Image (cartoon, rainbow, N blue to C red):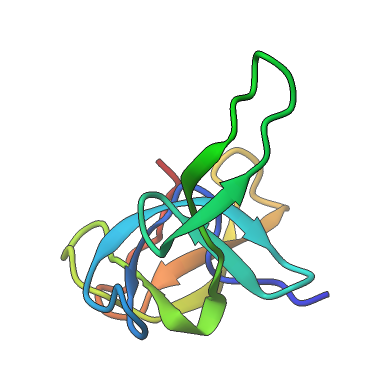
Length: 114
């Protein structure tokens, strides 16, 4: 299982496909499949059968997963798409410990989760 540079709640830009150029927030990441679901992007229609009075049938619209290679992180500082790197930094609380943070290749700053 690979470690991805895109995480839940990141803002990403779609670089390929029907929704190319649109940005959205990552709702879910599927590391085993290499896919992400982006809020209100790559919408598909699915037909559902009714199953009781609480779930009526009909056509529902939902987000379909995008391949991770088709999205790019948006740098929070410059608000432009950027590649993601990793940097080992000293922990601010304990000088003996280190931690790995994601950095924006465009601005060089750490990318914090919202």
